[in-house]
Length: 85
Image 1 (tube, rainbow, N blue to C red):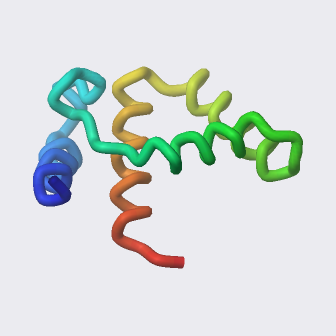
Image 2: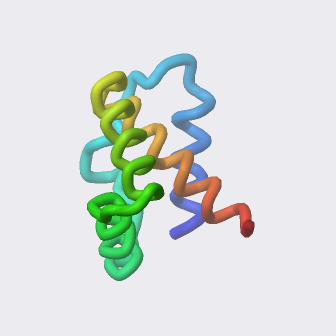
Image 3: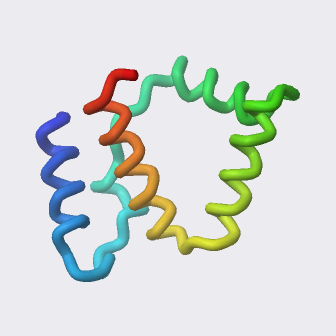
């Protein structure tokens, strides 16, 4: 599955523009539901981190197209998978 994801990501990044929609059925990556629930909880919380996450999400959602947001999401997921901090 990871190899498939990496190939999908490379094909998007290597193209001159995002001519293919990333938000459709075949570009779906498996996400751990527990991690997604924790992420939503962080985004909906009351702390400083929660506010920062909400501000980033609002800016991204307001300034970028759906396809651009999908590209950002894929790249962030890939970077999280490849780096341990």
